[in-house]
Image (cartoon, rainbow, N blue to C red; front, side, top):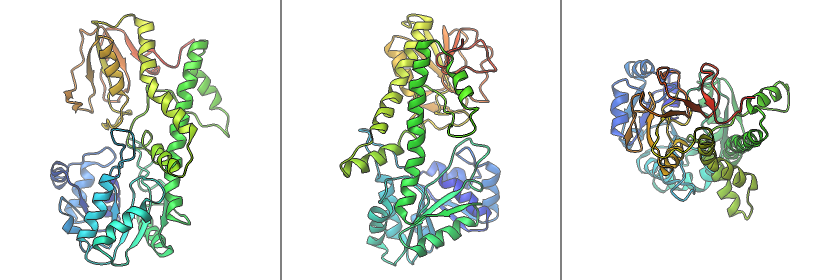
Length: 394
């Protein structure tokens, strides 16, 4: 998300410095090489050549910045709790290097109160310049060709009206629609609601797909029929689990804040349980359809969390492959967008495999020559011979 907003701002005329702690990422950017989907090499090269963008690992380069945007990961730790370590380090580094008053905007997703209770105090330990503080939670959807930085509406809140209004003016230079909110906490909570809504509905449709499977009803046809209703319904589709940098993570920032207030979201807890159990359900369906997997050579296709992106954060492929190996299968995986993952490398299409399992299908994936039976999480119209494990066909 940091590179997306950097190039959008640079292309609108701002002089942008991008700070990242990865030498590999910075060296790539200085050489005109993008490391994410959604920002092309040509866009990087253009911003570099026009002198509008400079990538660096040196926080001292932000000392005279007028606007600072924080866009760092806010994952979960090994226990499933919110991990704000990178956000804390970024705020501390800003405070240690800033030499004049600035507008500081947080785009990293976190619980309501993060801007007021964490970022501002940590910045002002080193830079008590009466800075302005605002929040505009990122809305980047990797691989989405219809919505990008320009035409995705922005929500902006601030610790003061002046901070909010300054941030609104900033985003209006490269975003078509910018919506101000009454407080920073409203903007922070809105992002959590957006992704908790998706998280819960994915859990609902995953459970619904199991019900339809047991009843012998094709769930994809049910979804298509329901989606003809022009109001009050939004189609979601079953999958092997839930992945990415937002949806599997953000609801737990809300849940943590709720627990601190003495309440709990039962919907979040139930949906988390359903989504976490989906890999086991899918493998059980595979065993029902194919038989004992012990000693079988299985190739998994697609380990990224969604189609046409290389992001493997929180990918359910991890659980699927672990379960397959627990069942005694010999597992390899093939993903044209992911060269290395979990200490392993992407294999060539294995023509000697006993079966294939498609978790995610990329446009660049060429597996037509795979002759063994292919099972998929969802049916694919282009490959009618694939055997769906969800979305039963009548």
